[in-house]
Image: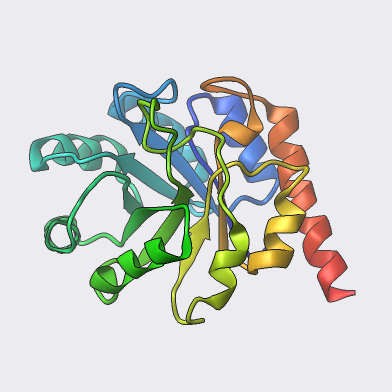
Length: 219
């Protein structure tokens, strides 16, 4: 299925099963204490086994040190690391070399000028995740259910590989695909019945909406 789709912030076997049944290409696990989606590395390691060979398992961390990442990688054995904090290009390179895993770097976007932040990471990060800038009073760097103007991404160099995140749900993902043509999509709060509580029906609806939008474009 193209684009890639990551269902992020998973914590239960039912949610994993729904993501896999709907054809998600990536499943994400969050390791950030302030998030309602946080999970213990050992539990993520158990849950990710269902995805092995079917979808890539992504470990999401925020400004984590080596000791914290060591524990995640040892317990979960992820296919990819996602750095969702203020990590520098040098830190991304360190993480990539230390774990010999691809790294996706999240960048917050609210206006065209923010896209300049991509340049220092080109050739360093394997992929980007473009998320909306969080509200000023937010405690989370992502997963706030906030969108940005997706049309900003239509001007990106086609060689920039990324996932679009922020405020996506089944009702608007077709618009996101039409306006930005992203190579990947990431959803978390948009498939929840409450913060941190994934809804298997909403996961199915989202993945069905992606397929329907792609089918409409092909037609």
